[in-house]
Length: 123
Length: 123
DNA sequence: CAAAACAATGCAACTTAGTCGCAAAGGAAA
DNA sequence: TTTCCTTTGCGACTAAGTTGCATTGTTTTG
Image 1 (cartoon, rainbow over the protein chains, first blue to last red):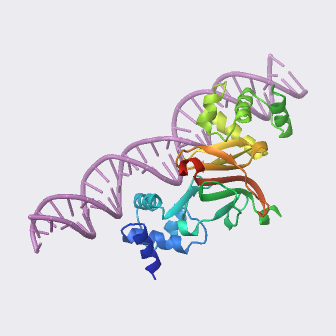
Image 2: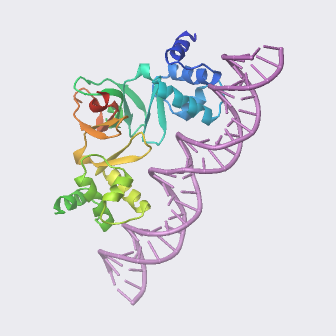
Image 3: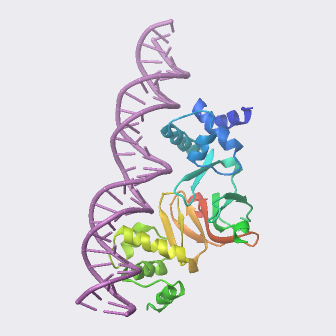
């Protein structure tokens, strides 16, 4: 069950603690980027927010996760392995995963965030 | 000189005050999205930050400008008329304007932000 | 095993971009 | 001028995220 997660820790040279496992378990199951509140609600273990953010910072420094800010002044996190473009709808506030053609983009892209009104809300 | 700016105010049904003119003048000349600090430094008129943000909120509600958050927990603003995709480099922290093929994207896109390492920093 | 050395955690205090309430100032209408 | 509405400045406030520090947990070493 945790094999994939343990492999992630090994790959990024991060020691696995209960707190770190709990965070990554949630991120692994997530269908879209999540913020602190959302992750906290889904974790099977309570931890201080300082612990959470310190571990998140470590994950990010190692390249294991990516983060971005939505328009609500909150950080959203996701595993790097599932990185793709996101569409944040200013009407329904949902974060949706989308496909984008990035063939023409120069540089090393780590995250893409589009904002606007989604198909459903626009209709 | 201010004809274009005045037209913008008329178009979006916003009364023009000294404060509003000063903000939009800076945005009109900007080559990339700017945050409060940057706009404040370029304005020819001092104003309270509450005034600034209230006017910005009004501009945004009218569709005159767009805003997004970078990774520095600050809002960046630009005129809607000059909206295009931006690349925020995690190494040099510059915001660069880029072209993107959005033909396949459904919905009404208002802003696109890519993050990663730019061509120059990657090299 | 014991003890030193280091890493992870919890708690509370702190930081700071942005927001809000309210009173004063400005400006249009009558 | 008086009334009414809008805009502004000031200061207090908010809240996500950060930091310092003491405590606990976990390796390393003698």
